[in-house]
Length: 445
Ligand SMILES: [Zn+2]
Image 1 (cartoon, rainbow, N blue to C red):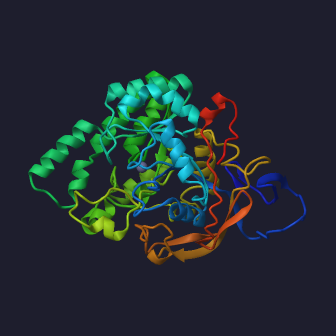
Image 2 (image 1 turned 90 degrees about the horizontal axis):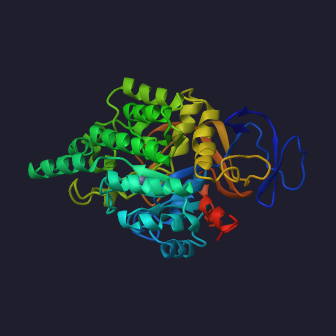
Image 3 (image 1 turned 180 degrees about the vertical axis):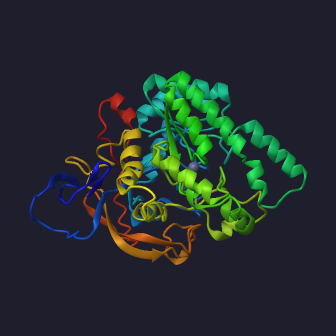
């Protein structure tokens, strides 16, 4: 069994969907023999877009959560830009739509429009996991300027809520877009000029400052470079409550892949790595503890959807739930990071950050029995035909990984085996911690 504190040989006793004992408990009831395998707590992926309800031709809850289960993710926090949750009735509608549609447990996040700031406390008490904010207008969600971010974070700090902020500066991306369009550019290299490093850095710096002055707990989404992470680190040292997401695409993919792969590398912020030295710096940053947790930013489209039309009209985003744990597991088994740190980054830390711990993110007595069996000697290659997401492709296709995810259990029940989900749809809604303010977090659909 692997936890952030170490690994040890132990029995895990499960009853009623929960862990009831850990240690030398002997054999009672049904026994799963995990000799030679690693037992990890289920991963907690807090940045996922499953488009349901919404543009379900790209993904839906059954397929997206089947991909999660197949590759060791047992809890997700979901939000869909094209069908945002802004008001209590939106959350109620989404929860009722999703009954019987999820293969893993899930929280739901709200999107924040500037005019919705006065309603934030009420939304928090309804049980959203966090508020998603953009600093630039993206995917149809309006960008918040510094004044709106400031107002939102002050409001959030007042009730101890959580925010996830997508940081790219609107004035820089808007001017770049205008200039690029006027010059007639349609080549994929425009992406790195449109969604520039400085646009991300300016917004990361501004949001970090406003997190500091407001006292709000803020997560910066998909921090793409060691420089951006350095700003986060500095702001933390002077007192800001900042978390920072590490996404696999900023470790694995290179900036110039967009030249050959075009819209299959259109996501934002885009891949930044230009050299092996820069890749090494990303891993150094992760090992140094600057990144607080791993998240996928799963935002899939099929190959057809990605490649219709010109580069400007192609949808942003990558599929990721099929490959995020495998990618970091391979890195851990290859010595890039400690396996204990991977469990910390992709299970314990996100669960703690969003108030889901210790039901999620741990295998201690009383935790939900969400666990993953891993064969550390297994080796396999990512193939499009094995991708469970509706995307049916992956930027990792062709890569060989060490570490096979043998089985995934959700609340004691087998939900996937050897990459094949059973699609039982037993996942439950897990409310955010705001429901505590209304007396009780036992609300599960
Ligand atoms: Zn996202």
